[in-house]
Each structure stands twice: as C-alpha cells, then as structure tokens.
Image 1 (cartoon, rainbow, N blue to C red):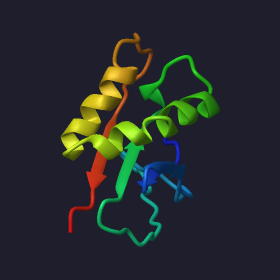
Image 2: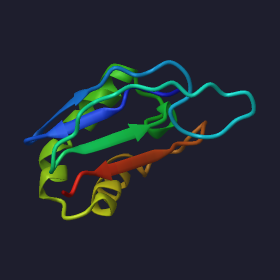
Image 3: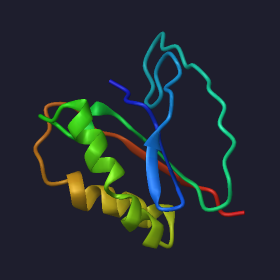
Image 4: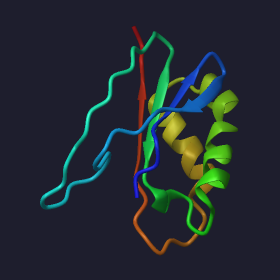
Amino acid sequence: GHPAPVLYRDGTGHPLNAPDGVLLGATTGATYGQAEVTLEPGDLVLLHTDGLVPGHSSTSAMDRLLDLAPRFGAARTAQDCVRTVMEEFGGAEREDDGCVLVARVTG
C-alpha cells in the first residue's frame, strides 16, 4: 500500500493527493502515476508505505505522521527527519516491509 505523500510547511503537515499507481518501490508491471505540487524553500515531503505503521489504521498512522511536524521543523537535514520517523515508528515488528523517503527543499 502507498498512502498519500505528506507535505510539511511552516510547522504543519497535510496529506497530498496521491497519484494513481505505485509511489515507492519497484515491481514488475508497476504503473507510476504523476502529480504536481509547487514546493517552497523549507518544505519537506515524506513518502511512505503502509508497512511503516503495522497494526494501525491509516487515519491513526497519518495523525502520528502529522504530529511529527514540529520535530521535522527543528531537524537540520532530511536524514535527521528519517531518524525522527524511525524513532517514532521503528520499534514495532512488521508483517510487511516499510519504506520511507524524505525530501527537503533547501533553496
């Protein structure tokens, strides 16, 4: 599963509209959709698979991700943001693979 990407801007986060198809990963015969969003310096975009938060409903997982906005705002790099995600979600056992991608607009 590929939940909607999350855009963090000015200390808050909100889910973006997910394009059709696979957002992360590679698989035979996958369709990769496209969507366009204008990003601004300081914006952070987080993509993740539903395996990131095993056993939680998508609403619960999204709420937890949105609550990370202040911590992302204080992070110096995208790598620090990935560490934050892993601190929040990394301890649970998974039935499925989890994947996270964080991109920060720096200029």
